[in-house]
Length: 92
Image 1 (cartoon, helix red, strand yellow):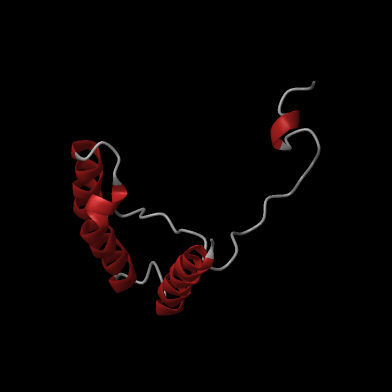
Image 2 (image 1 turned 120 degrees about the vertical axis):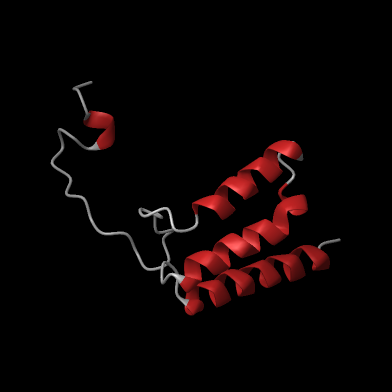
């Protein structure tokens, strides 16, 4: 296999911009403290994200307040979560 073939290097594939709704990076570290608090919470709770849900919400709100997310994305995420919960609730 040629170098870079697995990643499109030798095939000439052109990179394209991310689609709407893709997680944007926090290049300026505007929400770094909340992110670090969340990661510390995960470590303390051995990866149980349900115990860190409030910090997760704070991080998402921080990102939205700084225009990294738009409110439409938050609504889409919440609707998907509700739809998944309803689907699993209906399983036998």
